[in-house]
Length: 207
Image 1: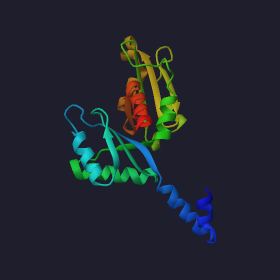
Image 2: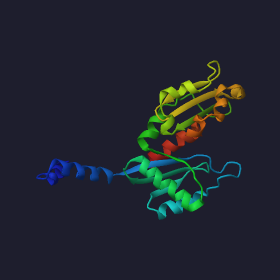
Image 3: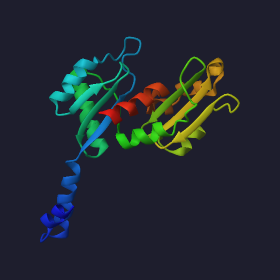
Image 4: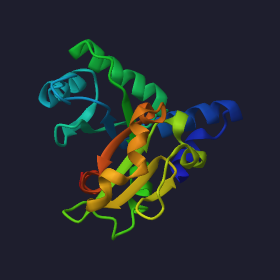
């Protein structure tokens, strides 16, 4: 910090602010992009290897992917996420001719969401647990009021950025949460099971 302070001495406050902002935006950040509705039932086919190559050709760094549901890791200089999202979605459009929504989260966001999943909310033969990552339009605690929750079988919690739902497997078809599929809210989320969500955090911590 001493070198930065000394280097900025003698210039106006507004100039110092601009230069500090430049320093901040040059810092490399880890991100994951979660794609919605790809490679489902033969629709919206997005080849991960082809997408990786296209992203690298357009300046995204350290690109890697995880499983075919659309989880893409990369690093980029820190910048406002909306601008980064527009750039990312343009690459998909140019490469595949598809209008695919991407939800981009940085490492801090992923840690906060995944860290909030109770340890005993698992995804296995006995229990189903899904993490419903939310776009900004739906990202508020009032989202719970839009759900049909059966408290005797559904376990649902909101954390900034996501809804987390857990249910014992024998009761899945009785869940009130299934009614969400036909709502506008459903269009503003992308869903990963808790195993995948935890793997995303693990991958971001390791890279």
